[in-house]
Image (spheres, rainbow, N blue to C red):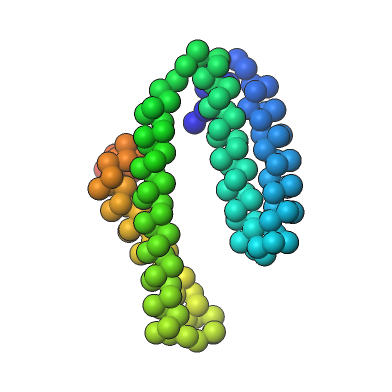
Length: 151
């Protein structure tokens, strides 16, 4: 959500420049990590580049606005990280149980295992975010609820 702030401030070059830097970093990280970690390196490299992008945008926005609510951002980030870690652990556990229970390499069992794992992951993330009182989760639920009520 920081890039639109720069456009609102009339400083469109900042997010464009940071995006260019991030694309270069993403390519370098992916090349370096794919050799060491295989396809998992691509996911890690892309995630690291996204964190770099967000961090640089926040730093630049903080300088432009002479400060931002850093403590609130750090608090939300910590809660989100905990919820994501819980989701990750649940995902690994559920997928392991499903593979052990249904070890077939055929397409349909793989699709079912994947779908079930994603469903459990989303449910665990939602419950974790709710229990940890992640403000963005509550805002997202309210937004979705409002849109569903309109229909």
